[in-house]
Each structure stands twice: as structure tokens, then as C-alpha cells.
Image (cartoon, rainbow, N blue to C red; front, side, top):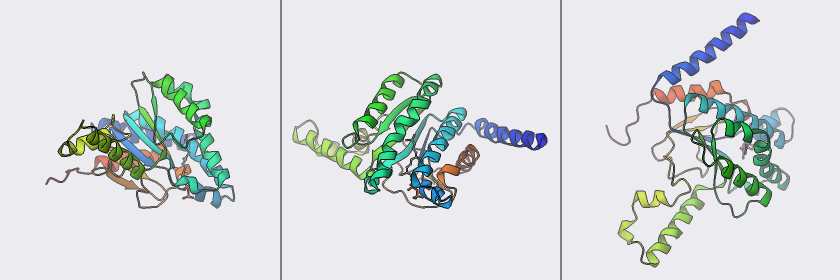
Length: 254
Ligand code: FPP
């Protein structure tokens, strides 16, 4: 048993060490955390039990990312389409950020993590928004990993918002239509201050983007796994990073 544990420990350390030894650590990793409902169903549990288990995976993966020097993590926690779910599930998902922060905020601060919310604040319940804003305020000076929760996030909504802002500036005479280029659009997205993701991970075997960062993922390496989010461990995460490191990114060139 002890030998097995030692082997496990050595294997994990080697995995993380090999990744760290490569200079090619993705700066920004985005994650579609999918499969919580199926995880719960397989265990005859209510869907919310899957989300709670998913929250534990968030904790592990954030630490794993921080440990190898990833600078930005964006986690898709609630989409603009998720409001269509049963009210009980929506209410639960809206309580999760608070629950997460009530146990994790001190440690996040200790680890120099900066927390941000990406998404539309308009429809969020005040208790959810308040918890996030307090965490944003308390961590705003931190210079370590930036952890973005994409909450009430929809890429099309984000792009419409950017287009409206740009149109308003044109109407006000502050901007010429010809000045609307890629950089101008990017400056009006929720992600205006951060680089585009280098790697996007989606769990649970679904191979689609589900309205997640459609503009930002244009040249991102995509990595899919059948593993359901609550079962996703740091070993899976490091496997994704190692495969990313083995890919050649050409950005349309040869
Ligand atoms: C998708 O799985 C998952 C979500 C819509 C919610 C994701 C939320 C978490 C992982 C917890 C977030 C934690 C914090 C700290 C905010 P699904 O429910 O669609 O799964 P299914 O496709 O199997 O039904």
C-alpha cells in the first residue's frame, strides 16, 4: 500500500515537473465544466449534488493551474442559456459562488489570486453579485493567477454588447466606422484586459462550444475529454497541458 502510494505520488510529481520544465505553459486556460448532471444521475443523486461535486473539482483544478504558473483561468460556471433550467437548480447554481468564496476566499488571497467575473451582471440575484463584487474588491491588487468565473456569460450577448458600444461611439462621432478593427472589437469585450485563451478544455464528451468565448477562441487549442467534470482531476488537467505542449500552433501560417 505504502509502495503504491509512493509510486502514485512520484508519478504525479513527475507529471507536473515535466510540464513545468517545458517553457510552454499556456498563459490562459478556459474550461467548459460539463457533465455535473450526468455524474449525479449515474449515482441516483439530484443534479445539484453534481454541481456541488463540480465545485470541489474547481478547487483542485485552480490549485493545479496555479502550481504550474498558468496566469489566467476562465471557468464557465453559468451560461445565459442556463436560466432555462428548473428554478431549484438555477437557485442552487446562483448560491455556489457564495459558497465557494465563503470557504476559499482566504486561501485565494493567500495564494495571491485575483478573482473576476465575466458576464452580464444585470440578471444576477443581489446575493450572488455582492459575493462576487466583495471578492473582486478584496483580490483586485493580487498579482498571481487571475481566476475568471464566466457567470451569466454568453458569447453572443458579449459581442452584441460590444457592437452596441461601438455603434454608440460612431454615432457620437468618437469613432470612424473604418476604425472598427479586431483590436477595437476586442477592447469592447468582457475580456478586454486579458489575452485570448491558449487552451480550451471541455469535459463530458460534448464536442461543441456552447456560446463560450466564440471570438476569443479563434486560434485556441481545443481539448476534449469524456471525463465528467466532477471526476476531472489534476492528472487530467496536466494531461491536457502536456498534449497542448505537443501541438504546433501556426496561427494560419505554415
Ligand atoms: C454543466 O453541467 C455545468 C454547469 C452548468 C454548472 C457548472 C458549475 C460548476 C462546475 C460549479 C461552479 C462552481 C463555482 C465555484 C461557481 P451540466 O449540469 O450541464 O451537466 P449535464 O450535461 O451532465 O447535465
